[in-house]
Length: 488
Image 1: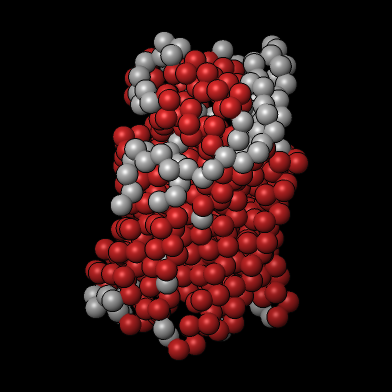
Image 2: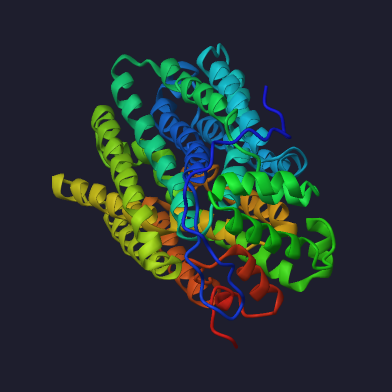
């Protein structure tokens, strides 16, 4: 049984000592021990569960529609009810995680995923599938709120960006596994096995949660400073580094700010700015059109005259590209930084969707047109995986001040799932009215808007300690400059 107060942690391992940064000096070489890496990697595995369901439902949707005689509108709800659950789950996660801790929140999510998958696999009515997917959605909302936040509090420096990106990479890997399982099982129509598969990784992650430490920031926020010190010393592998980090956390907690996210939002303009930026990032991520492709790839390809089997395996290619680029992004995010990758990502997606819009809008046929459409979708997914996918989650966990971090990340996660629901619940209907060509063109324009949004507002946070970002935010710096060390 997971306990919120549990302090069992891995033995300390060696790490490079760090010196805390100040607002006017460059970042130190922050050390993060092997225990932190293992804990962050275990937490990042939640991304696998998030992605797995996306891949599985894309392949299972056609069979569910056939067996339950579901209309296109009913199938939209089979997909989008998950976002309704995620919307509620991410909202509840802020309160639950703040009160009981990140670890217990993550463990609860794994139980909900297992229960939801079992309900879907044994469904005799489509209503049972909707209930199961609603529960899975609640769990995914908790995971997408908790995991990036938890990772950012367990790690420091470059490892922070790498591990949050690993969460996104494992989400891509989960999508690929779902597509592969769907491709293999679709030949026999075994959709119940498809939707029941998440039970296995959910059980494994539940067991892994028993060995995770509590978040030191969460412990400090609860006034448990000695417990936080013990955890930090284990995670950092160096007592001096751990004690200095705890001093920074205590200083931020004791800076005279109102307690709680709502109080901060009412009284502190700097917090309103960081919350608005997080919401904007998540809204723009969904307006790239990524989940239209991920949820409906088989239907898009069947509409382009692919056979069912060919569409299934072409969808596997989409998942494979997403996973491979997700691995590459782990290395790119620490080398190139957030802003350049995000801008490059959006430009690639805009061009790819414009090409897909031309192909669909001109109703081009023949093998060349079909292959060009597949290529455009693959390039689009690659563009998302290298930047907009991992970096939005990374940034949203970095830009919020410690006292309001739960609230700020909850708001941005709610925005993500709310916009995800709006897009996925209307895509088939919009295509029926406007056509696939104009729909893709609209998403292409949204990616251009995302480029402008990034250039105007998004900071470069690579290698910048969270405490320094918070100091710059409170000092009133423009949002795009809160990651800079140069004095104004």
